Length: 90
Image: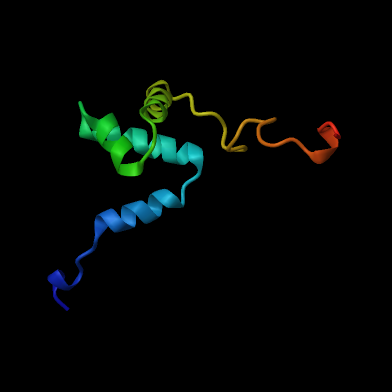
């Protein structure tokens, strides 16, 4: 087999990889990509992965300050829909 037989569609694999990440990992990965691109990196990555620019900036801040919270929980405690027992009955 020749070296040319092993051509990969990197963009396709990158999208698959990105889809497998948790929310925190997506934010950090997008921030890292934006930092590698440079000046217009946040805008380009925002359009590429269809995420808000503030999310990427938050990820950049976390990377620069190295203040990534522990990976025990993806979302903050108390978020989401409340249990039916806590809702008012009509």
